[in-house]
Image 1 (cartoon, rainbow, N blue to C red):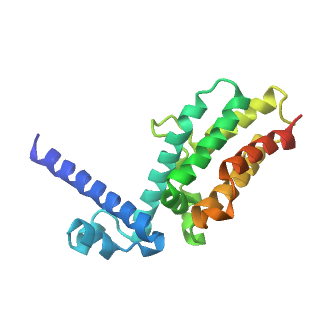
Image 2 (image 1 turned 90 degrees about the horizontal axis):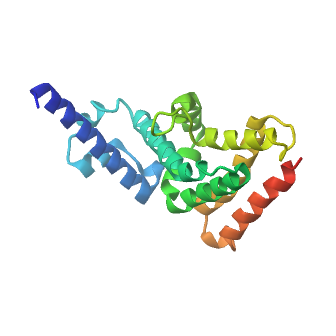
Length: 207
């Protein structure tokens, strides 16, 4: 390995360390507790070193958001392989809920942030929508394609697939956001709530 390749490898390794440290801080203190100084202390580098990799805290948060979406896609990909769209839609719902339960800090980072972060997320949506294998289908794309198939074969009413997918996403997001941000006792039986929501989707949009 030449000196240029070695420097690039070291640069990539440090960038990964910085992101790992940021994720740990978010996990323990929330996104509001994430500062460049805390990251620098965690990796034992001068704060100025971080700015060589991320010009601002917002740039670093955008990278965390991007990585969070890729993680969500990985949760959904097994469900996306199910042939029957009705079964697939249920599996997507359960996988999405499991992501929120198992990765609450990541869920809060990508979905439950102040408007400035939300606007930044909206601006980068085309990038977020690419799957981890570069296949161009992201988390929302998996849901939207499934809805489109259900409409095409007559299971769902003839409505815009995007609008239906956004509505389904909103219903699931409400349940998962409660679970991710509030005392778990607020949802008496989360699994049953998710199941009822999925059943309700089929009744609401049935042709």
